[in-house]
Amino acid sequence: KQEVTQIPAALSVPEGENLVLNCSFTDSAIYNLQWFRQDPGKGLTSLLLIQSSQREQTSGRLNASLDKSSGRSTLYIAASQPGDSATYLCAVSSRTGNQFYFGTGTSLTVIP
Amino acid sequence: NAGVTQTPKFQVLKTGQSMTLQCAQDMNHEYMSWYRQDPGMGLRLIHYSVGAGITDQGEVPNGYNVSRSTTEDFPLRLLSAAPSQTSVYFCATQRTRAETQYFGPGTRLLVL
Image (cartoon, rainbow over all chains, first blue to last red; front, side, top):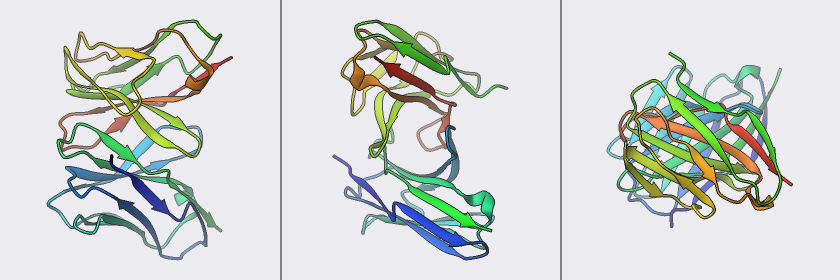
């Protein structure tokens, strides 16, 4: 069974700092990997999707990398802002792409 | 274009009662999934569908039934509610398995 781990569970940084969130998974036979953001009491918003054949994806201040062989992904946030405060979730899909397995998330607080 | 809608937003049930959580989408996506989110556990897949008439079990299917008679709707049925089913339930859709998942706003369920 796929296990997804996110470290750290919580992170607090001053505004403007660059930061890295980590995601590791136990089975490298994945179809793709997705990073989400969740605000308190809300649903999930997709940030970046990386196919298994890709190494990274970028969107604005966000960059996600994937090293399938080592079972790791990172989400890099540049020049953090208070509006980035949220929980960030990593999800990896099964080999067939039909099922997703989620980590428990990293709760990020950006201090003005 | 409403995206993914879920009803109700909040529900209280007594042990043994049955109910149906509704999920509807207007994006003509083939893939639909139901997740539950519990503190410290992350999101876990309950059931999923890869198209009308096709459903399959996820990680935690016991106590839940689904059917998919149309592309738009994917209801989740609790046959006999138990306190262990107290959770926040999310519905998600994808156009294809290689694309982004879109989440609904969630249904918060309390079983007494």
